[in-house]
Length: 269
Image (cartoon, rainbow, N blue to C red; front, side, top):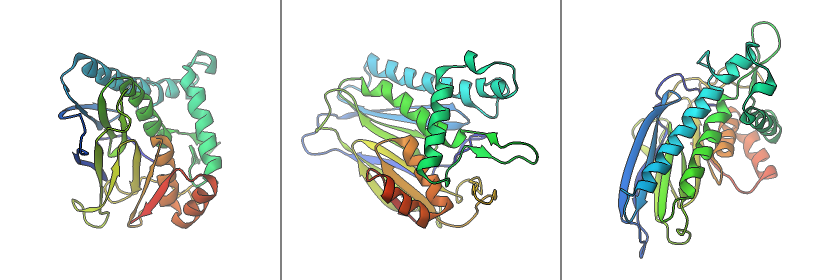
């Protein structure tokens, strides 16, 4: 599960895409902003990447991610979730996304048979709800929706190394392939594997880049073992959920993943 207290070193990197023969997109533009404590980058390919509608969609995507941070940050006392937990507001006063993320957190825990959870034990009292590990991927998918409405583009939206690759209107079947490099968890700076996508998501979990930040729900202990887990599939939120679950227990997660869905592929390094 991802925490966002500081800029995050990425374990997954967008490699210069190789256009397919006959592809019509030729230009490229990058946008980068610091949101949720991490660098979020957007790379767009289009015939004319300087178009005003592309810049507007990028601005809307980043604005969506800032809104997600406003609502769900666990490190800002003024976020809606923190104010809800403090009793300063009621559930009825909250944005509808709060209920959606809560339902998704419950669904993720059930799908992974508890290998992923948004509830963590405190020193005393009931478990504390913290959907951080799910919100990043979910929020990036909300942001990517703005880009999918733009005609004639291919894009790669990356948050701390977890990525959504997609296309705008009119690009199906002719979009370029994005080559995504997965960092070797035992050799920082080295690429251990690559994934090629025109549409989909890639998420990687591990301790090599950020230390022991993932908690085993069964023991309550942070995991510091070597290696990493990468999941590729159609939706970043679920890819991130499964990557986290697989880092907690690779064998159990793989078995559960195969039994639950055939849409996501797991790689363990």
